[in-house]
Image 1: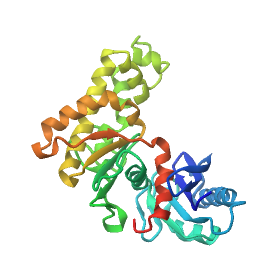
Image 2 (image 1 turned 90 degrees about the horizontal axis):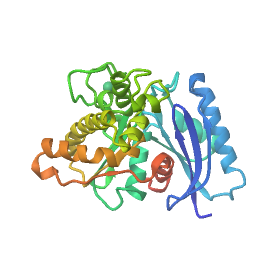
Image 3 (image 1 turned 90 degrees about the vertical axis):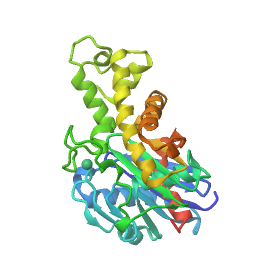
Image 4 (image 1 turned 135 degrees about the vertical axis):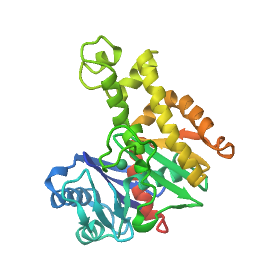
Length: 316
Ligand SMILES: [Zn+2]
């Protein structure tokens, strides 16, 4: 194997680890359920154990370092997780330093959305551009911005928390405490909630038949929309509207060459695309309307590949 990086993608539900080659190929891959409720020590123990297993048998010097993507907010310069909302007790955890001590390799830490943005830029849908906005739309909305050929960090690495820009003054309260955040109205969670509110258990709607009567999710909405179901198509239209409002803001702020949409909702990208285009057409200034909006290409491997690229591209 060519020189590799040991990469981790630490999520609130799953911890993934891999050896990744410099070209972005994943050589060996593992995953476990994150012991998110058990506090930082338990989770760090899982990371170290997985790292040791992945490193076992690798020739000395063949693994150049460790890259890890973790939920923000975090400080990549200090290697510190500041306050991860999905991981109990993670406040000011010096993760990079701890892993360096335990695994004996240099460590680079990055916000998980930034890591995925780097991966899409180097190896996926944003290859070859100078400026790119990556929006990952799933349970929440995260983002990463490549500006003039480098990842934008801002103070303490907190730039591009796009999920918490205010795009309306009404609606559900966001977990951050505000009303009208991009993620509170346009995430997959918001889409599922609208679908659940619109329908009722046992009402005979296709959405509730697909959900088995329980809460409807974004996946059910896309499934129903693909059969032409009118309720689902209206929900998709509303979702595309709110996503488009946020993306139009991002066009004006960052003037990217391309916007890449990842996360669970990119599975329904072809359904959302016409509504996105029409909202951007209405809301973006003319000079921004021709910017392509495309689906991410690396799926749920983007986090690992991006974490590895931190090791290979040390100037990021
Ligand atoms: Zn918020």
